[in-house]
Figure 1 (tube, one colour):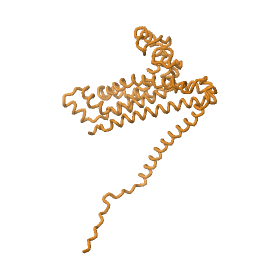
Figure 2: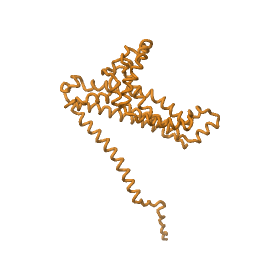
Figure 3: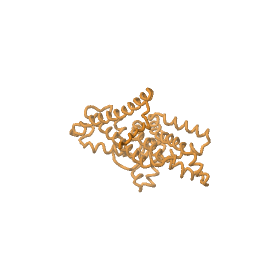
Figure 4: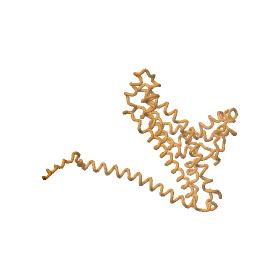
Length: 319
């Protein structure tokens, strides 16, 4: 007995035919993404190749090192870079979140629009202007306060030692950095808070929550990943800032957590800016090697931020 032939079912999901515009856009997007990766790889390769002579050469042949080891030279710079940026981030993030919440959920519409414009304009101020303000206005103004802190709270390690007579300390530089990254974090947090689903906010208010309770249980959890992203973007700006730190900070190359003394660690970017004009030969390779360290620090911090955000990605405002 012969079995009947089984008819093959037609393909239920035929592959759509792409139009020319779709193919052009897809190719352009792929090219743009590839260019970003190629540029990043080229920068990393350049930094590594130019850094090898500074790391492998005898330290006595490099005048900037003055006979010391490469890691002994770069470690204070790494510490100063991370320390100043971390202090700036601690000061800027709470203020930025508060301003963003005020603009998005408390201020009247006209006032919110005006504050939004001011925040955006503050982000466009050149770093040299912030450096001039920090060195000539902020530092002399806070110097008496620094003296009071060292006299009354000198037992605390952060306020120990003799206060700087000029006020140009690591804390002053961090305050300037905090002001510089404040508009970036504020603008991003404001847009994130405005994206909170209205149903979540109305549900919290309908259950009897106050406005602050609604923000705490609906807005802040929704924007947690965005807040982290904004903070990491501001941290990247603080890590790479050059002129403002170079103009404000009176560095001595010391590794210390004291915030108010005249012995302050320098930062990698500021050290490169101050030393590069007079550098020659292997000294240039040494400064490029310190730039490679800054490049690595930035990559590590961004990777850590992506890891933290990925752990929160299961939360969605549409759930």
